[in-house]
Image 1: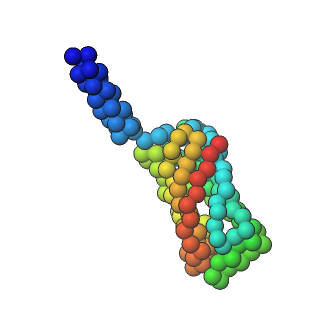
Image 2: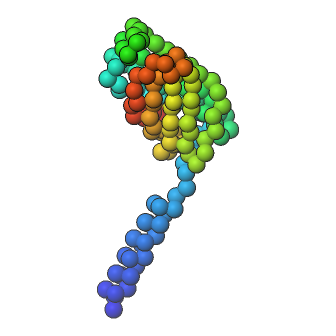
Image 3: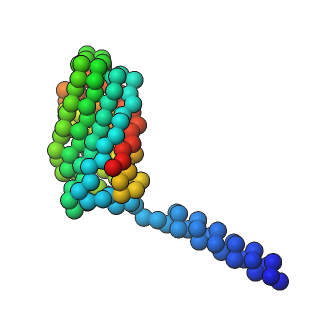
Length: 139
């Protein structure tokens, strides 16, 4: 009898933990945070990305990318640094930031101070395509 009760309890605990993991809502970012990290791309010696969250935590206010020794089809530079400011809403813990000077930055908050995403790097209004890479940052 005790064994049946223990197995039922274990089953209920497993069901609850599965539901909690699946039912957890989107992660809200830390308001005012600036999250920075390294981007490893095969077209540059080094790269960094920085994402600034608004003071109310509802939007991305600024994205910065910088590279050293970058080479793309039709574009190369010893160093390249671009900062773009544009309030982009964070919806369900995700954002998509588009800019004619960077390309497209997609991100999803994995914790209030961690983002994982992709960078589709394109310069000159998309005329120079460099490629798409994964990135992650934290505070």
